[in-house]
Length: 71
Image (cartoon, rainbow, N blue to C red; front, top):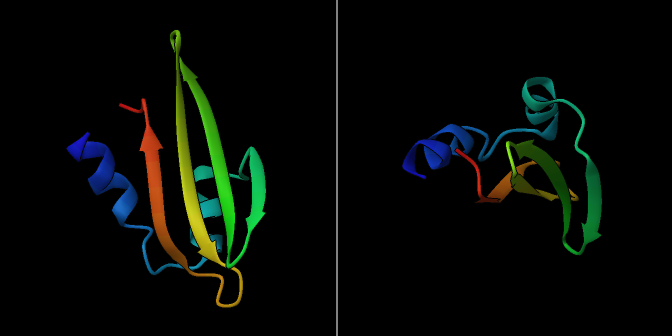
């Protein structure tokens, strides 16, 4: 989990284009004011890894993220 947090924290305060450059297009974009949430789903064996990045809709900057079941 700490490795995952370290990996994803490098995107904080970066433009969404940096995120897309490294991880590709998100599987889904959820508009939830004041954010656009980029959702990346990836199946690892039988476990579904889900990463969500909260992008400020006005500044296009990654402000926070969540990650579940990712290794």
